[in-house]
Length: 296
Length: 296
Image (cartoon, rainbow over the protein chains, first blue to last red):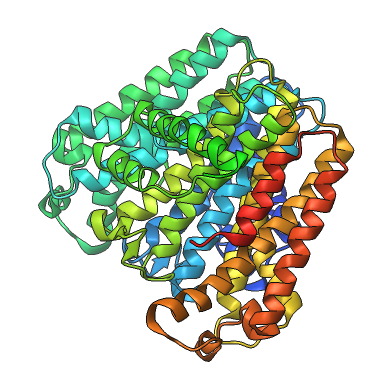
């Protein structure tokens, strides 16, 4: 808790989590479905995506109020994707953040429906829960941006491409394209949604889109690095051994050193972009450092 | 092909099917995902939901153009729900309309993603593919109505309630509430969306919402009746034998005769509502008759 971002995140996280639960609590639906949706929504996590929406609004010196439903919308999308990804027919994971996955608790059918419900309702937070001060045009644009980030040209497409690439040697370009869609675009929505809500100039919205692509790819490279260095510290597995499971990663394609260089490159590019914008830079610089150095 | 509706449906169906394919073709996504989405979108069916959007616009004497993307949106939602419902963890169906179900052809993971993709992209048809003549407020309202019809307070909630009710004796009221959400609300979206696009007076939009509830419930009762009478004609299964599988249906709760009376009641109420509206009644009257008498 040494930088401005940490204090910012800590102070907003509870609010985000309260609202996430409240939106869902208020919907009329069968008890089991609601429990299943709330179970995954309340399973913790960094809440990075909603917090980034607020951080961008804050950096532009704007009221963060309307960032809350928009941030909760993207968190609901993220949560649905985890529920569906964990299903036996997908990654078949029994644990997520140390707790049994949704389908282990509620069964597969309920998990499919909980995901479908979260995905569908997420858009309503934008259409109906932001204040009247946000014009209908702007709300429509936010829905549109969220669809692009989450749909077949974004997260769903990235997940499908990832499945196709399994057990296959792919190029760095293909790997980048998968992560761009699977991870970076949804995080990118948070950044651009914050900028759109803040009435940022259009050229800055586009620069922030590029910024978010750099931090999104950086986020994924750090994930790959942690996978190796985490293993090293904990179970003494040698560096690079993950390449033996035939899944292409940044270290497997670039070496660990090369991956670290690439991470540094994307973080540096991201910071460079921020330097040219009409906003308070500190929070977003700290965000870059967080992504580059996070240990979980 | 004896009434006005038949001719109307026949002339519009091809257009709807062309556009459904075209919207999906144009999206950039991995080949397998696209094939899987198109496979289910192009698997046929009555296309009742999009056609109803156009029928309501036509009844109000309005251009049907903007009804096409809106109708395709609801058909994409309907299609995603069939893909997810057919999954082994849900109804575990191998065949749909005489063809192998999506997951039998593409695998379960691809079927989950195809459903997620169709659901996500459906909203984009409303946000981005209706003409500029439809105000942003109206498009937002349409998205909102579609979420209410398809989400936890609508179709997804009805599906979850249906699962909870399986192998259980439920009351007529509970049965009605399940079908209202699982079937009637999405059909209701088609009716109200048509009215909203037609700039119908607000009181007529609400009357049409009630109309759609009657025809939606009527649709489901006819389904239950066909299940019995279809069996009788084809395999000589005695009337009412479906009650032995412990799934509550209208005939099992009301007798076959009682179900037919209830169907007649809802159709009559629906026609009554139409009589009081400022539109050409013939198409929608024919729609009521089609629902009451359909043989598949």
